Length: 123
Image 1: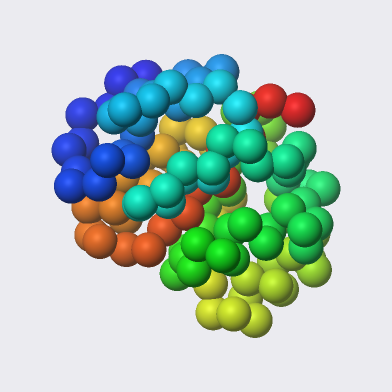
Image 2: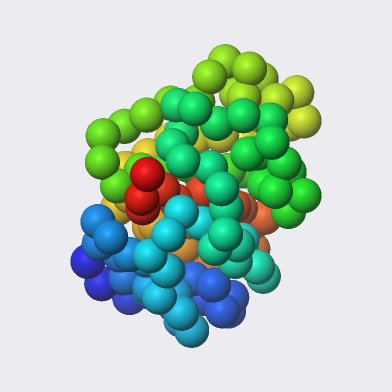
């Protein structure tokens, strides 16, 4: 689906489908982290329900105020330990399907919020 929201960030999501995310300057086909000023395409995490402390370390390094996790298949949720790791740092955590996650990410970018999207496109 094509999104039309414009943003000052180069990393707003222009379009998405089940297999890819299209940013203003790049098409991504692997699991990734997208922040306002950085994209990590070599994120080793495999799925939301099996996230570990090691998997979330790159997210924490980006210093988000809110994290959106999204899978292109069924809804998955992180373990209580992973959720608690975000909560204990005052970081909001949302889990959404890919469409709402992309739209929410763009809205938060337009509000100059420090948001990170963890998008799972492959296993």
